[in-house]
Length: 246
Image (cartoon, rainbow, N blue to C red; front, side, top):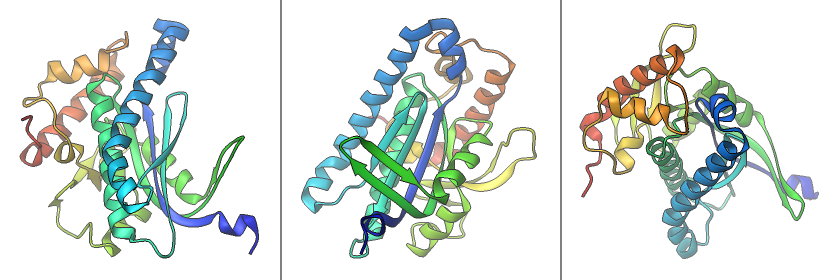
């Protein structure tokens, strides 16, 4: 079997990008870019440390990542002999941590999950990725008009096969929601309920949401206000399932 064949796997992808990143660059120049990358690194390392302990025990990797500017690509390629259900659940927790922690750090992200054939090659010179799920997750994320993570069609089918998702509108870690889409009517899709995975502020108000959108010297323009309002509505919908701070 060729080396390229060994690098072909099936797996799940998460694509995320920071809302308002262009304004961070304009208002902060390179210092802002550095602080954003540092905050993203801190959040990812924190989230990896949570699943990392289980990785050491099981000798499985539950989530890897590549960061480019304000874009984060997380991925979990599956081997044939792996328990895809357990790995998928840990990967979802990893992604939920990224969405939740970056939001409270003042870096709201929009993202999407997708599933399918992947090419993953890790060498001394870098990480090389290719596959339809990368495109699908990127396109689905770019349509969002709020901060959050949707489950694209391929990931929804996979998670249903793993009995992680079903037809109900509300279940642990997910909510079927009328998702605000840019310049289009809302679309009913599953979203990752990151508030059900991770502890957060006990009460969320419009002022709190706006403060997260305004962090890193981001201006609150009409676009940011709309996304902030949509995010608040989503948080309110998730509220019954939200973890409470201890």
